[in-house]
Amino acid sequence: MRVLVISDIHANLAAFKAVLDDSKGLWEKIWFLGDLIGYGPDPNECTSLLREFDHIALSGNHDWAVLDKLDTSSFNAEAKSAITWTRDTITPETRAYLDSLPSKLVLGQFTLAHASPRQPVWEYILDPYTAAINFEFFDTPYCLVGHTHVPIWFEETAVHSVIPYVPNYGKPTNLPENRVIINPGSIGQPRDSDHRAAYALLDTDNLVWEYRRIAYDVSKTQEKMRAQNMPSRLVNRLEYGW
Image 1 (cartoon, one colour):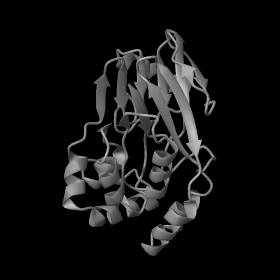
Image 2: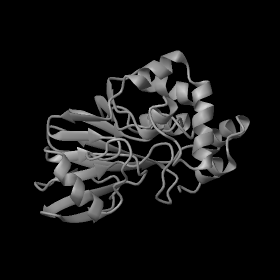
Image 3: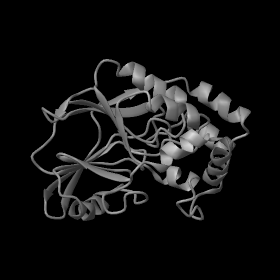
């Protein structure tokens, strides 16, 4: 099966549409790794668009926060502001859909978690040490995560020995015999100093992974955010990818 692997849309409709346009005809199903809403100006529109396709979706920490399933005391001021705005903006249909999503799934050879297999909603896997610990918390050969907004591949070469790899965009790569934790990056708010929307394509039959990036009209999302008086830091960061 050909799969579009995406994460962290964060209510950024322009970025989401750009990914769908760029990948058109290349996949049969969507695997979405969580954080559909939060930060961005189009929570209902992004939810409706995702639901148009054959997909599997997870719930992320921002989704939980909007649903009051998560304490937001550790969120920064801008994130809290966006959560409050989103709570007031989403429709009952969007809320019900978000409330139906799990935070972790196992699909054949793949474990899917928003943040990590150890702490599916919150933990950040940003370094080999944290990745090494998390290999103990899933049994499949492959684990797909989001949450950090940074595309990266962690490969287990021995017990507690992990090597990180940065993406080679547009180059299909065979998944290794070693176990891996892979993050496709963020569609709606990348944080690797590249403002382009990040996503991946996965062939589950041939076990081939491909990292991809696509530019989108950042100003369109920014204009919508300014119209809603969203925090300027959230608006500005989109064009810098941080």
